[in-house]
Figure (cartoon, one colour):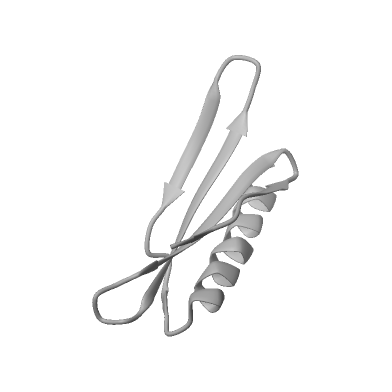
Length: 72
């Protein structure tokens, strides 16, 4: 699994590519935001499937940025 978290507009966006038994990679994503009261985390599994790990991570990251942009 490839994990790399980045900060985007106050959120931590952590895309992950999970290799499946059939050789495909699932694009998974966790989005977190720390507030004064608590931390919120949203998890999205298997957004789509890819033959290449890097494509899965890139897709999850783009999807995460769009999610953040639509929730501001």
